[in-house]
Length: 109
Length: 112
Image: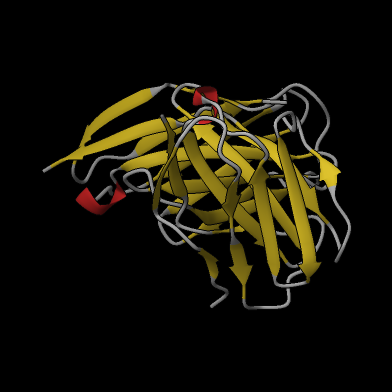
């Protein structure tokens, strides 16, 4: 069942700006993961945050998790054209992942 | 790097045909998964497997079956293809429960 819901559905930003997208989910989770998909190809794992963590960084990515609000956010700083992609959050609550419908990010040069 | 290889990038099949989608991973991962991806619906889990010869139904197993005879290979079978099974099919694997997934490049299946 689809658990995560990303917001917004689409985002257009200028190169160099930050991009923020949010994910809300319904039930308790073991961890939450973010993935990127370029041009309808396979998904690439970006970052995993466990239910007892509140914030995690990886390069230009920053993920937060608020289990009391059942929400997460992904921040991409100093965006580049190569960041143009769809981004999905996925919740792990029974050792298998449930994905949202994704946020499409377009970075304009 | 772990690699997940899906045998076909694009596939066109006729209604009623039996279709096999193959997926192979090369890093001894325990878990393997099949999803389908449709616009506006995200990824939906069809079947998954935690071990050889073991399979579990996901959220939308109807019309599909799977086979895992060897640890590295997980096959998705469309018993009698229908037009509503036209979709992008994504295979994934993970080392263990609670780990990130590695996805294949996907198979875009069109049933005519």
